[in-house]
Length: 356
Picture 1 (cartoon, rainbow, N blue to C red):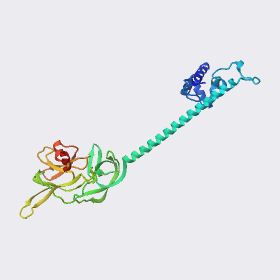
Picture 2 (picture 1 turned 90 degrees about the vertical axis):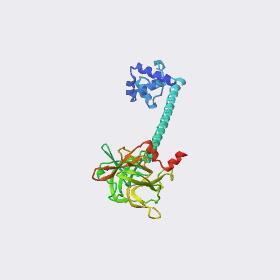
Picture 3 (picture 1 turned 90 degrees about the horizontal axis):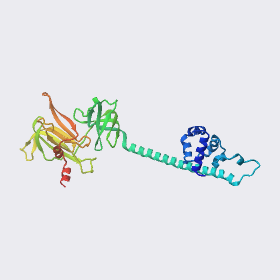
Picture 4 (picture 1 turned 60 degrees about the horizontal axis):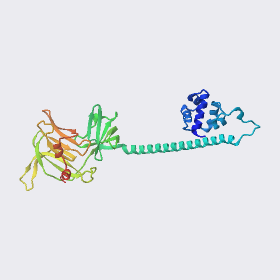
């Protein structure tokens, strides 16, 4: 017996019995798709279904296994001998179906095992990816920038050379967060954060002041001094100072940060070594890559344009607002500047690399 013969016999017997595939499937408590597979010689029924199947088709199990109906004269009687071939054929067919069922079960088990292993691997890799991507931690850090976009408030916090953009939760008192003390020192905050290592974006659930200020000191190195009109002053001097390797810059040890100081005063030429008289600092920008003076908004007054150390917020502008009573320096952030300004804000290492 082969599957094609067996399937054709089931299909013919079903039609002779006046049954549809769905009706036969209902009697055997299987799906009509299973019956269709039997009739199309794609599979055998389970061994446990052979007797119910034969009964549903009006057959004996021997007839089902022989794939033919027995005539009355051929039916076995108690006192008559039966040829060995007649007895052995249904048995062989039954054994073939049993072996096929076993092979099918083994294949099914193999696929189920493979699927389970693949699922476990996917879950494991997903867990590793998630743990490597998302960070939940408590930060004690100063806040670099507050920003409101639409109806959402954001805090920016530095982490290893990047700015984390943290969306404020409902419990964060955004309006009462101040970045500096009355003396200009950065204030530390304790924040419960969750953020993405790849996008450097996340959320902050709570933000409370620690009562500490953030202080820092650099080596005192003086570089070439320039001067220009700036803010409401006719002449302001400025220079970079306090260079040090950026601990998070790439390549490590080859990117330098510095401070930029802007001041007014005059040289004291009465002494052997020139010193400044009536020196007054107008602006001190700390921990940046470079800075320059330019009229970036074309209002007739120069502003300070700073290249920050953060790729997420690369440029900061210090401008002055004159309300005819109090002159104050304000600041805002830019994502890009003109190619001319980009070139002026290149670091010495970048200029050298460009020449090479």
